[in-house]
Image (cartoon, rainbow, N blue to C red; front, side):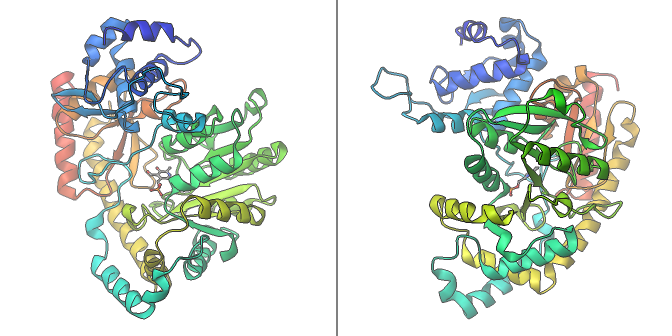
Length: 480
Ligand SMILES: Cc1ncc(COP(=O)(O)O)c(C=O)c1O
């Protein structure tokens, strides 16, 4: 550990924020085996003193590495290295672990692991599995298995089961204004797989990618793993703001979450949508539209997808069943401009063949028999009531915790003062609250501090108890 200040100073990259520099130093030290598996890192306060940076810088770097899977943090115990690297003995191979340059990029980019504990307040991005019609799903599974088991046991179409592609195309046309037919749908296991496929097939090292700032780590990691040059583009109250785009390197690809910006929850306005499409067209760039939770819009009808406005085949639409059904289903899809499909279907076949056929068939039946629409309606009501409750419970703290854009989704962001973020986060986490700092979602300069608070998987009592716990924590560190 005593080498950390030296490594940190030696690898100084003044053009990057300090937390990003520290994240990189620690990541490299872990990958190089300087920090072995299970070794304990110094407390954030101690490391901050050693490195002569603020504690929140260290806190940010640690939280980021935890989210990426490099560190394991245990409240009251400490932070430990969570992955093993090969010790770097001199060998003929290029890297300690013998990874290709691509492999090193993938590992260095990190992964984006979702929490496996939906009922810990305030874990974000989790639907409520207890509200899912499991019995009905079981019945549909049995029926399909009986009727069609043999076909579904064979290898399947790498583009996806035809009846599921038909069902998805019908749903998207009707509910999301997406202009497509079943031939443009590629069924995958996750949005993450979609982002990786896009990165591998469309991005060369040093290609420029515009990403929303703050934005989704899964998209950033996928693009970095292909060697992209990341350009963070700020998000304002109308969505991604490309007004200053003439000062930016022209993009090869733009990633955006127009329906419900991740993590700030803004809906991209129509003029912005038109401007973005125009810019993509000018630069001959692709737009990835990640529509991950647009089904949950509580106060107004959701705007139709950007894809439906696209006249030039620039938009690649990404959808997932992780939020609207359940995450372990592992079914998501891409809507591709027709000329991209052969390459994408081919790559899917090359990487892993296809998504399990039985799950695809049951999902198709769930959709075509009307259960999907009914489930969305019910979950919209349930999650909206939980959203209302969380907003009400937070009301007494309105002077210090300000919700932003609570109009939809499974979570909303709240803003708190910058100086309070790391201390309040640590205090809440010590009481078992899953508080995800907003600063983690910035690539460059942090503009908003606060948390992303998930509520959809929490019962009413869990929501009010968690807010009480939060209030006590805040009172204990600050007389709020
Ligand atoms: C913006 C965004 N896109 C996609 C996903 C994940 O979807 P999947 O489980 O299909 O990878 C998430 C999950 O939190 C998300 O926040």
